[in-house]
Image 1 (cartoon, one colour):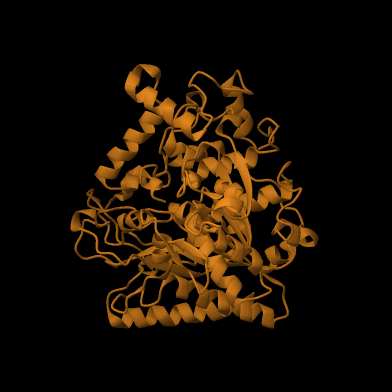
Image 2 (image 1 turned 90 degrees about the vertical axis):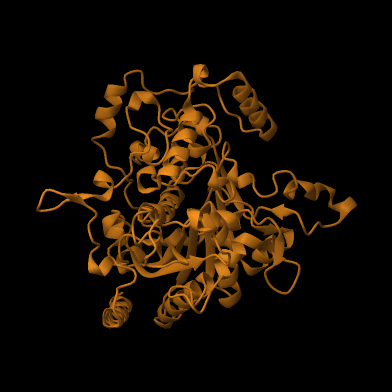
Length: 509
């Protein structure tokens, strides 16, 4: 999203360039600074903005529903409990949990089975940040740090019972000035493309538990300068024949390609649809029920909607659902109507204090539909789609108060709030299992009493290792983790290995 340029929740500062480190640090500190550090003008501006946007931000000194007066006992209690709830057999209810009835009577109160599935898909989206190479001094900046067969193992997501089958790469159609290029090196793995997400599929055990073969597509949010630029493109353009229109920048990232690039000779759209088509045909050919669940955070949530639209057009009757977090508006009311007609089910998770879901169309949006009898349908007005689960930062006793756009938009903040959500009228769930420490991965949202450092998620020693001579050096990547091996022979070998592994995965599942 355009605003995520400013509230860069997902960028681990230690993995970024120095400039972004300083920017992230400034915003993080501004969000949690005490009154003595805010000048009066800045405070008045923040108060005016929050009043205008109805963000319901509490003063720093206000903290409702505190459960612990002795935070040391909290440490002892939480550190000795599992971080996940037991897996339930949900095969008989999978269609309802997948949105067949638009999650009616499942959101308020939030059904515990649905909560667990939402966290699962949110963690798939979070993986696109956690494995992204942000190091501007790395020749592989913009790629995934691990090959697809190691991704879930490295991020401790193997427990979810899915296998990654395909990485997705995207590019922008614009030329960026050299000072805005993501890497400071001239010789990089790709000058044009970025790792944008992946396709995964449930294994046999998870398939039995959830009642169908689930294909997942996880999309990453904004990190590259060219993606920021595309996020600012506010004009609507047609997505197909008809009145449906979507934001130009989102569509550009989804559909851009260039025959002279290695990773985007085909667009992100073409890559993902080719893989989804292969998997759907294979598993349906085996007589299995198949679903497609698409997830993403911020910009990733917007790409998820475009992906769902295309999948539903190509696979009539396929159960297609979107679970998005902090996603912006994507298109107009005609786009929403077409998604409804195609049977796409969308569950949008938003945080009340987060600005990104209010964009674009912060003023002119679906609220104008009440005047349709007077104005007619306005094709240029942005409109949200699907069901909404609205969360509130003030519901959690573990989160700081005050204006913190970085923290409000963080996907880890979202997942923390989902894990603790019971209903709109209930206090934070006392039995929440997810590790609270994760909230501060890339922001400063946790109360000081927890003594969790801000922005702690980073490579050890910022990626440097001490070699046998006692010198600190940047290590070479393992050959299987290099996105673009040098040498034609090595490239051909990697293609043959990847093809063999794909067939092994398909026939073993």
